[in-house]
Structure formats: structure tokens, C-alpha cells
Length: 140
Image 1 (cartoon, rainbow, N blue to C red):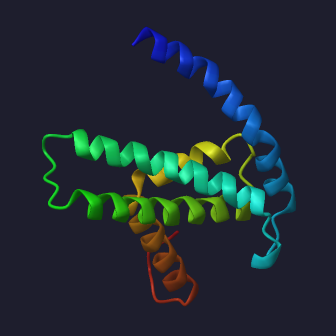
Image 2: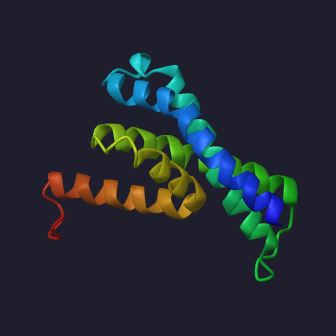
């Protein structure tokens, strides 16, 4: 266990430095046209989404309260949901101009939350559209 902890402490700064250049490039050149989104930024977002999704899936598998009927189906579902949550979060971070150092954490946490995060995004988006159309009395 101690060896694993030491390895983790050494790899964290290495991972941050390796992904820094791609993240910085993605943050500075993100534009409103989908074709101009830098590929290296998407690769970093996909990688962070997979890491967050894997953590969520492993925690779900290890939980004694959760019953899984089909492990391959559950893993496939979690991978797709975490990718969508991570990529939506990547887009929202760029749109809201979230500081560069916070973006990887936001993407990873959103991917870990998966469908719960997507439900929140959908609810907030619908609420905002209703508010803009004048159909809602609730303030944003």
C-alpha cells in the first residue's frame, strides 16, 4: 500500500505537467465554432472524463448496496455517461471562462457524478429556457 501511495504522489505532478500544455492550448483557443475546438483539449477532456467515470464505476461495483445485473452493460453505460458529462462540462467551463487550473477538476468530478450531473444540467437548462421565454416565475 505504501508503494502505491508513493507512486501516486510521484505521478500526480507528472500528469499535471503533461496535461498542462494541452489544457492551456484548449483554454486559449476555444471558439464558438465546433470545428475550431482544439483536438488536444478534447483529448484531455475525454481522458479526464474516463478517469472520473472509472472511479465512479469502481465505487459502484464495490458498494454492497448496489445490485448490478449485467457488469458489461453497466460499464458501457457509465463510460458513455461519463464522457457526455465530461465533454458538456468542458464546454461549459470554456463558455463561462472558468480558470484553467479548475477545469480538470470540474471535468473529472462531473464525469464521476455521471447521470446525476447530467440531470442537473438538463434541469438548469430547461429552467433557464423557461425563464427566458417568460413561462416561469422562479428566479434563476
